[in-house]
Length: 118
Image 1 (cartoon, helix red, strand yellow):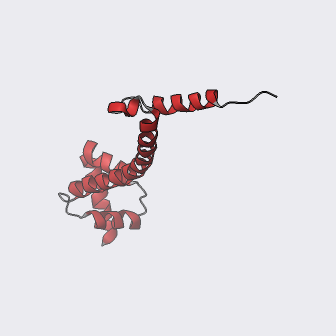
Image 2: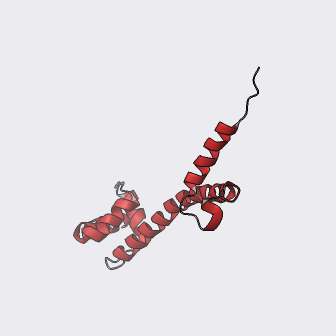
Image 3: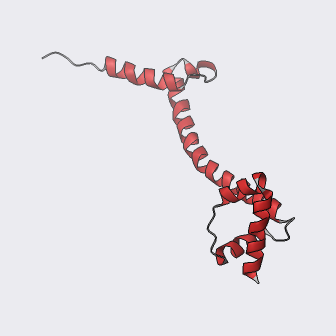
């Protein structure tokens, strides 16, 4: 029986890692032993980045909503409480978009929230 060597599989794995390392600085995009840990670290960081992105967007939306509802005489927390009590279910992303692109409609929502709090 012939001896089985792993040259083809190893070459395939190395090519895959080096393809992912394209654009890395120095020898990290040419040499497998330098590229492998760099790629593994980049993949870990990318996973964390995807999780952080969600938090950062939520913070941005809340800041925008708060900035838009202050001139209407209500704070963010009271706006959200008022909307919940009035039975309006709208997510923060859409509230933020309304605050930017249709301030008149957003002001109407603020008035509805104020009325529900009284």
